[in-house]
Image 1 (cartoon, rainbow, N blue to C red):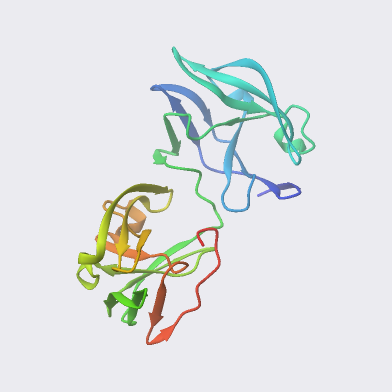
Image 2: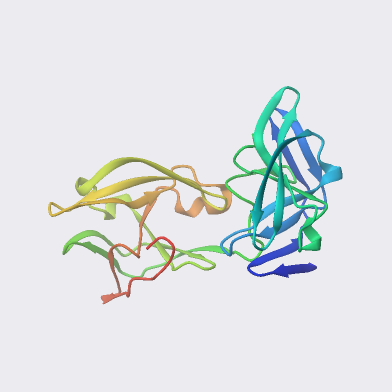
Length: 250
């Protein structure tokens, strides 16, 4: 992939066909997307302006980015559906690779496809890998001095840039200590996560346990299992207490 960099922003050519819909109408269809890392955690798609089929109506507003320059904002209009301020262009960007591209707000669109498969939250990072391995390591989770989970049959999920996550059978978790939560989060690799809080009798620890009821096909191995934030609980692996990792979830 060719690259263009400025500050923390990186631009690379993508190889997948990308289609975007709004209200069932086609907004864009391209085989020449650009992956743009506006932040280091994951990329977003910028699409060639000539591959955008929807009408872009200028809002008259602009926004400035120190690295990308001044953005002109547009409403996206497709067969009567409208997403206000959901497109932006950087015609005079110091990053030359962005000048002929359109950035569509991911959440404002109805559907995104890579080839013929839907994607969620943001594009998959080509440098992120997820491996889920069966293990016989002894995992014990402790909160406020209370053992909340104890298992010899974890699935360990290794994801680039994150600490290992230990997914445990529900039967190895103190379900009587779990409290339902309305929180949900979304992952482009695993799907939609639901959460529990843990009540140890000393305190309630909000949203420290999550599980994927129906994970995406590539992550089916964690169906029916739950994981704890290593950053927020004490995890013992084969009897040794692990140091709590420092991540953006801490």
